[in-house]
Image 1 (cartoon, rainbow, N blue to C red):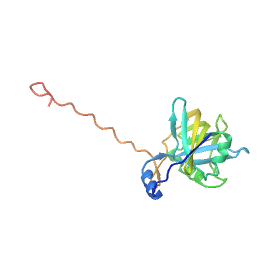
Image 2: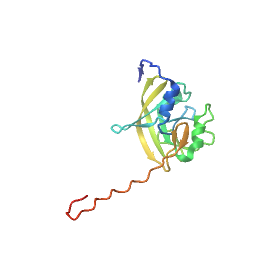
Image 3: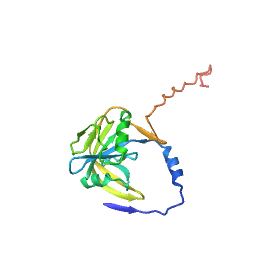
Image 4: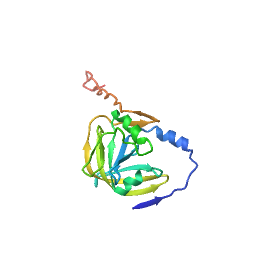
Length: 186
């Protein structure tokens, strides 16, 4: 099912839009599937996220110019591989154009027949539920068929650079005010 969404185009400078939204960190996720001849296919997105708990749904966006998405769309299923901080080379490989993206990328086959990249932080096996045309992208909704946690920290992207999450130390607990001789706290 496709829904075409069109909006009036205000005069927003694309460079400013990239700058503003580039300040927001995103997770790095490889969307993978197998072509009909059994060849692994995939691409990287920074838009993968949970959409609904009941029913369990996810969403991501892919540029209309993607040469890989039409293959995965026709199969009707995909695995979202949440890449770990150790997988920057995998990210770069799957970000390239061409058919040799999986050269040197180790994977196993999921229960739904899609590639699960070894070493990922998590794997989410999905059936394609819907696709919405939105501007220069497709917005995909997937129904979660299987969800498997992995290990390691998720790879993040922000401001044109890759990194990881640095948790701030927890604030010290507030000290209770000392009672005064009258028995009231100060």
